[in-house]
Length: 70
Image: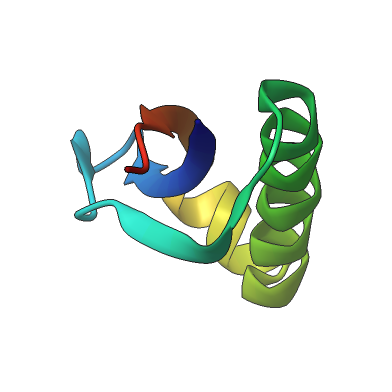
């Protein structure tokens, strides 16, 4: 089993989220995927910059989807 990180960038002001962004490669453990989700979230918020994040009240949600490989 592998885990696929799916990141959702959301705006509290607009009350919507972008379609999920699938992040490859997949991870061997849920633990690795979760850490990658937090790191990726921090990177996205940093790249957006304080002004945009504050104005749109951006939040990041992520999921680690389990994928059965045959």
